Image (cartoon, rainbow over all chains, first blue to last red; front, side):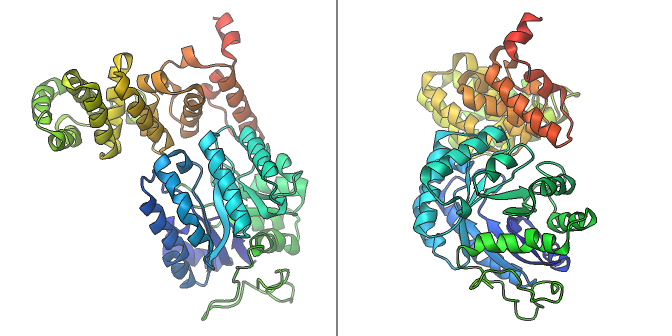
Length: 290
Length: 207
């Protein structure tokens, strides 16, 4: 099984995690810019963090055979603090970096006007830098938050196929499915989604435009829930091809829209997971991204 | 260890010696009076705070007696923003003591601190932000999000001051949506969540 984790916060994880992820088949991941678990207070704090997730963390992942990419943005929670919003003027130089494959995480947290303004600015940055955009949906008031998220996306005119709406669940998936945007599911040990519920959603919706991520961070989370979901899919009657589509080809197709994905094997490591039914390991990857 | 009553007069004297002195006394309060929950049944002091919270709150309230409005706004802001999570809780609980008579100059500063606490992921801070000062100062939308955040964090809703007076149909709507999500996910519904999902008008008629 080859795995691309489309959403994981590796700065909060250990080298043991990297080793376990490689052993599980993870060969590439995306680390979205996020908050620290407690609020930042200055622009400098963001700048150093953005440098870390496009620099040191990328190098650290490479030592374990995993290709690391990032998304850059001001997260919705901190968008409510005027001291943090000043970072919006700094995002351009980071969005130009070769390791940055999307704008985000952006979207709503508490459904405030400040969040909406910053969300719209992110969509404009995505259009300017020709990048896809990764949108977080809120924990609180999730269904209403998802409806407002989709209204903002529709109003900006961005092509829905360039938008990933993440942290969905049984209640919000249908809202996103009908728009043509990509649907992300974060598989957590206790909240958000679990593997069993994810497999039920895949049964109902099929595998098209669906991404599964661990969203592992500093909270109680598990960087191997991608693998566990893949295994449960197989046990539940999905084919190897279905699993490969959800855990590899779909994230590659979505983030591949940046034109910046590097999925070549790292020196000293084998190529992306096992071969798939005798075919190339890069089967299904769009031209120019593999 | 000493009691709050024994500690407070000396603490006030020392803290009156300037900003640095006030910050030091405030920072070290728990080392003097302890940090157990005020109510032993209240794990972590989420609802009623800790002994240290109470000491720091009392100190802030004493310092407020002699400070002008702008001075109190500055002091409150500094003690919170330059302090750790324990000091921040003490400031928030101090604002609770002052909530009914908060000088105009302090209200805006206090609201920003409460908002900062509600953005945190530390349940003790969020709980302290939802005390009397939070209830007095937070606009409806933010206050409702604070209540739902407590539910997410597993904090008893007894921590939300004035809940029964302030909860409204919109909060009940948010709670019902959350119940729908949790039911779809096969998760448990807490008694607190079920209680706020009932529209308050209906609920009050039946009382």
